[in-house]
Length: 94
Length: 156
Image (cartoon, rainbow over all chains, first blue to last red; front, side):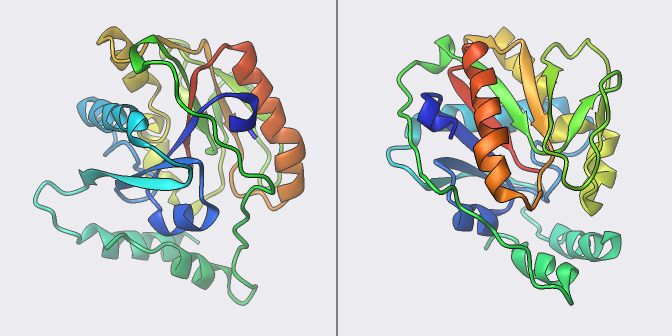
């Protein structure tokens, strides 16, 4: 709808599986836990780094419906242990 | 491989059926023509957030929206969304609504300007037709009024 009015959009999201189902015009994937798209609390440099990556990626979208991976890892060592914690958090908090 | 959210959402919905994901009835695409360093950028968030002085959102089917001042100096942000993942972002809403980071990128010259207002609404509502026919057009016209060149939507 917003694109139909002449304004380009970019979705910046952590849920690749959801973005691949709803197919936004442009989507940037951030491999962080949901609810922490731009990094851990109070980490302003990381907020800026993720947002800058997303913004500079906009020009790379050459066709509708693309999802581009920004290459952001949550853990500095590439560990994915956060997934177990997030799963427990999401099930516990429900 | 990316973390899979849909199986957990289905588990959380049980015994009700999983939430239905809906695509827009009409797909639209608008090419980016303006360079980033000349572009006015706005944030859209589905976190149902607001500044403290604004009226709260009412979970779960609130279809209203708030104009959130883009100047980070104008008061703290409150998140009204009912999602269970809210404990962390409520400590620091900037991690889902990077208002300060966007202002920082303006000062670094990456973007041309920041919209005077960003926009916030309630994600996860089930009235999909009303979202498409009422909320989305209203937000679109707000963005036009603000002369926004690029809208960044951060799902919550």
